[in-house]
Image 1 (cartoon, helix red, strand yellow):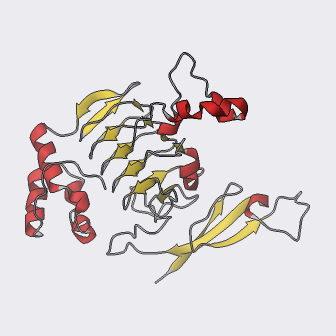
Image 2 (cartoon, helix red, strand yellow):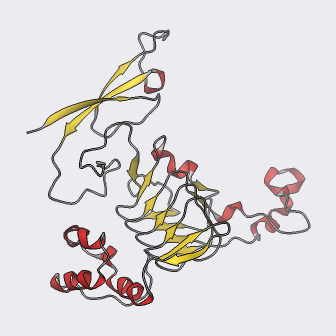
Image 3 (tube, helix red, strand yellow):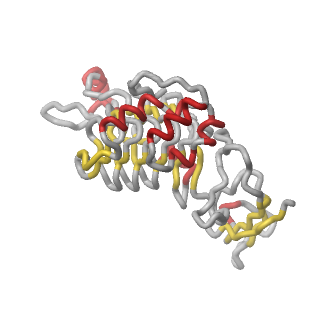
Length: 286
């Protein structure tokens, strides 16, 4: 049986879930009774079906996934998370399946507000199953200034200064910014161009990542340094060999409870039962 539930979309200009049915409540002073836009309303009322938990995995091609809280109920109200793969448009950005960005205000402005100075040639590459918290920042290579006697970007403003553009093109850009798979980036963390964050790593809130982060490391601070490792060295190597993020989604779904636990041997047994070969113990992102 399919029921429906109605909630108030409590801020103007919000983007509702795909497929939601909308009705709007105007502010009393609205002078335009014949025109209705999301930007002009005091609140948007959203109604969508309440569905039972499906037996299959979520669809990574859906921009707005269903979101459930730890009490087992569907989280109602403004959309707070988006899958990034169907959102990003830049040819310089690559995002893997199921990686999400969470922001209670504007999750769909990720490319504009969170990926800065992304003019190339460096790419932003984010693997699968990554979790990005609100206000994370990826500071791309075009932010770099020429480190001469002055750092002022004269040719950027044209005129007679434009002749100096070759010097500006030669400034020290640091290449791609790469996140592996299953990486958790905390609130307001900043990551700089040229950095590679290994799979399974955690970047703490407000950290500023200026150098590479090893797989399964937890880093914090400015500049970010390794605080500890989530797993011991043997477990890290075994998890990288398993490379579960490359498994077929039905196998990942069947092993979700193991992945949320702490028994690497049990996960290895599940991989063997599924007929999956262990991969070489090297990092892979794309």
